[in-house]
Image (cartoon, rainbow, N blue to C red):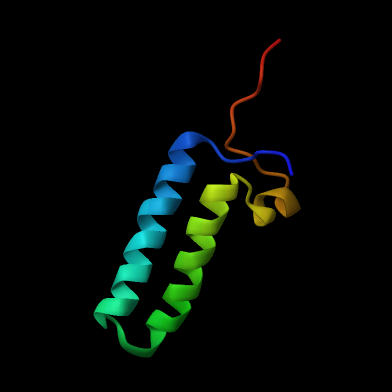
Length: 68
């Protein structure tokens, strides 16, 4: 897998994902938080593997270009 996440994108995903996971376990938001929990796990997971499959499908990348 090629990297397609910049460091700022990874940090944002970790923070948002952690907030969604904590919100689920804190009981904030009701039944919608199940979707939030799933999204949070996906955000944190993609941040740690440094690759977002949706970015690849749409041809996007926030990773800076490597220069020779």
